[in-house]
Image 1 (spheres, rainbow, N blue to C red):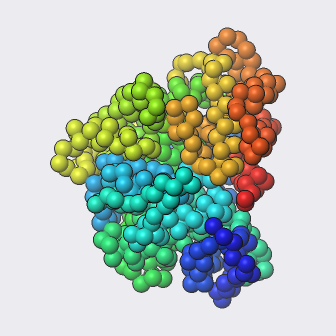
Image 2 (cartoon, helix red, strand yellow; image 1 turned 180 degrees about the vertical axis):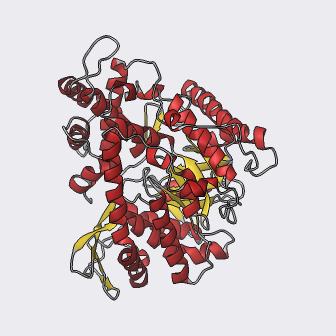
Image 3 (cartoon, rainbow, N blue to C red; image 1 turned 60 degrees about the vertical axis):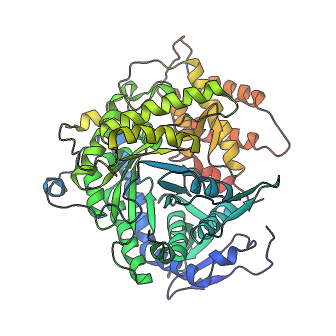
Length: 546
């Protein structure tokens, strides 16, 4: 794309200014219109302060857990859980059947592949599967705009033409960035003259909603969102207020927006009913965000002793105690309130050049989806189009012609707070597991720094969430003085040796980012302090525009 030589525009509401710091390339003005920027500025004016309050709440809660105060079900909201009568809004048009959802980033090629995939829903991911370069953020919005209007077409550098050919395309559910993430290419100056980077959440949501909500409604669907990294009912209430203001802003009926909340943090697992209650006029369901949930468990309990230390990442499956408890509670909670329960993503992916690897991926994904469908989930995620028939077959076997199984209440489930934090697995940490975490962490971060947010590594689809597990396990194993099964202590020096080994193993080229990736990995895995997210420092220091 060409660069347009114009000064950075500024848009002003009565008290808030929003200034663009990123370069304006071809067609960026179609997304960054004065009216859209004014809307995003108004979102910051009304909700930016509350966002910072909620982030402060997160810090306080992590401190309490780290100092021995285990989470439990809230006493001050018991009346919400005990009230049998309330229900959520449920499925909006186009969300009645969600048995298979495909996830992926929003670049033109991946957008077209998703829309042609045959899935019922596409999670258009501006979060963990997208490296938040300015180009990815704005051009992802352009891809979505064009796709919604039937105008998207892409020609690869090799000359291959990609077009949407499916008669029925998936319903789009867009995932904005989480509350903790910023957008450094947009500055917000408040009424007091203080200038901060914009909220990634409000930028992603605001631009998508402003440009596409009315068109989506006219096409018989609607503005639908996946909400990531939520940790409390108060965070859900903040999103609900954003939705209500936005609906009024465009003059569309209250409750038009539908949200599916990812339960991917430990604190949120103790407030699932409260989260649904706060979003009840907009809530469609909950999703079991398995990889971030494992990361959240490690993050919150990283300093609480040996009983909270997990073995190799590959051994932390959906059937270990704390994961089993949380997914069973999620299904029960959703169906009690008329919400959909959506399963998570198995990381195994096929390889069209390796028949054996593909067969293994199909078998593992089939087993995973068979368990989810049998447990009562209404749908599930896949990350590759070839996995859609595999997943659909397992849900078809349980659902038949029914669009969902929300009527299955799972009254047999009774989960206690102790079960939600039961990390006993009984397996060792292996030398291969330590090496694998270092290798995957560095290789993923290197790709992320080059603008790739979802990467196939060693037969698995890695994104920011899986990389977080890899680096947080290394940090915890070092600080909890763990050893591998052969008796080797896991120390900083040991891991430094593995970093050097990985850098020797990977193919290098002039434009790779492996040296920067290794520095990021050292910061987030070997430092004295534990950064809450690996992407925060990497985004601020290393993610530069080309």
